[in-house]
Image (cartoon, rainbow, N blue to C red):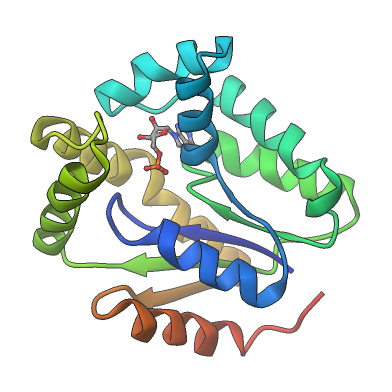
Length: 191
Ligand code: AMP
């Protein structure tokens, strides 16, 4: 099972990614989490990523693509994986297509969580308090939403054309949304 999970910042991707990945016994790979781990360890990748993340900008494709390539090459990702927060640009879509095709597999589904904008801002401001994320100030949240609309939303059409798009209502209780994702995934054949 090879899945991607998309949605605007604050749509609850991280939480849902873990539930869905556990269900299928595959790793949930979050590019945001990998970047954050590198930032807190002070690695060269972390130092480079931090200035983009703090400003709400995307880390350059070249850096992000290489990081994902290395991660999905690891043994635990051979049976499949769920990508949370990647791809986010058209260039990343192409790169991912190439990576997966090289292994003789295909992407099974692109799940998009749709949410109400006002609820998103509330969730993000709440998370900023709980997790103390530097990229959750109001100004940065707005920039991240803008960037999502410009760079990432166009990917929805791409995956719709590929016939693998599953749009899921991301509003409501976590368990309810998880069940909606499972219901949506039920319709796709496992590869
Ligand atoms: P997230 O936790 O997924 O919201 O990611 C946090 C931050 O990490 C983003 O705002 C970006 O700065 C960076 N990031 C995560 N994934 C990507 C990606 N696929 N492409 C570029 N930057 C990314």
